Image 1: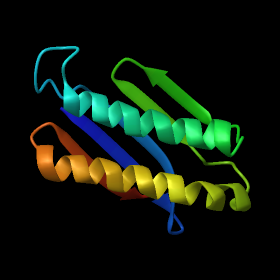
Image 2 (image 1 turned 120 degrees about the horizontal axis):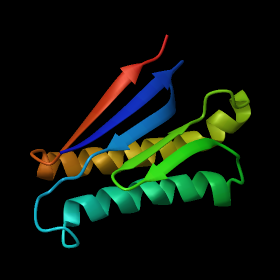
Image 3 (image 1 turned 180 degrees about the horizontal axis):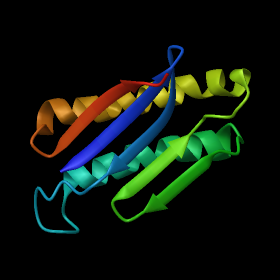
Length: 109
């Protein structure tokens, strides 16, 4: 199962961890994993290549995490459209394929 955990701080999405594999079909043919990977990596590319922001991230097989913590408030604000797009995109996959993915939102203190 894929688990995506988004963290909020002061009404902003500030970090995400996506881990696991859907294992809905044979490896290499898993549309759920492919969709999650495409959305997640596209958002990371949008932040790093389109907005040209330097963020901390980790990308491995079955794992993606990145954080906006420590960035200036203006840069965090710039990222919100992308972060919310990622959240909504993954939630839409969860609606249709909830047995393979769970999306959670947490509040940082």
